[in-house]
Image (cartoon, rainbow over all chains, first blue to last red):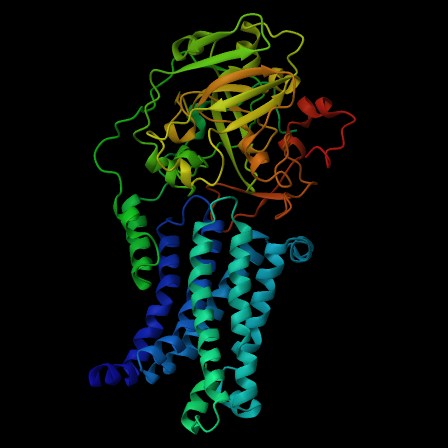
Length: 220
Length: 326
């Protein structure tokens, strides 16, 4: 346990996680040079970056349940970075769409956003992540105050749900992969609802809540 | 004008082979990515790549192929793209699934029953089909409803050739087609998310139109399994899913027959499914398309009405509201 904690608090672990988060991008670039991006490279890059957005959102959302269940509060150190990587990959995903897929055809893209539900929800999910990325700094946490900051950052729940819907509405008939994401992200959100309900019940019994528990409840 | 009566390209001009990625590299890549989130994907199915030679039918050279009419002078897509990027849900829903999973597909012996509202119903063996008329090479544009496209030197002859053999009667207003389906040969079929066997249909005049090709080969050889061996349709002015693969039954009927994607999502896939940049798929635009093999930074191509075959087929739809009959 000591060792795990030492690893989790090491500066090098953070560096390692950072590098690991860049592996999917590195792989894409490498495949690009190898001419290995399948025969429909635009779609492949679009789908791969999109997959990684959902994965990073899920990993980010898994931090809190994991650190509670494993009693490893140090895991929080990675949450911001992972969330920012979700944003990084959604930017790549969006750029791929704007540039390689639609080739800066703004009228057609506007049309898409307005008329196509799967693009509408995907775009909305992307927009919702922007304020989270902007306010991810310590300065913004201070300026907003912890409570308001946390409320704002719950937008990630909505963004993740929109991301899954975006994927589900895109596929033609085989919905197994979008359902996998729905299941995982759904479980992570249900865990929060469960934790919140338990917390609420405990609160209703007066005098049963100390400050530490309250603080825990608020970081859900 | 893009459509020429006389083809300017022959098979030998068009095909730079070997664009397709090495499977091994691809698997390694997927594994590395998969490893980052262990257990996320179904690793066992990825690890179980093909081993040993395929036990199914493999393409063989077709002799005596003559240049056919209606060929485009556009550059044909690399054969490696056309054989590696397929929609053939009986063999898996991923684009690279059919090329892996159809390796052991047995297409011999094969026969096609032509029946229904006809004077002389008949079953044609594959040998008979190959000898019914001179085999023509036709380089057609092929546009998928998913907004990608290819240009392929198909081999075959007009579907009307075989249809006339059975002498349709006056009740014959439509032609229904059915694909082969055998769960022993296609164990992934139940996961396809669509009703199988795959069925399609054409109006009689569409089926009899000289552009409509009964296709038995491509790139100088018989069809690879993943491309719909041994015999399929190619209807170049309609979205790709109308061009039904691995046909076992052709039936003349009175009423409009069911078609698989229309059964699945009637609001998204109509019976006609003519390529039409002005009628969007409800979920995505049909105004442009990506050419397979064109590369990551290639501009999308503007989609043409009837996929550029309007001069030949537009008159079939005179007076029809193509927004309604999409």
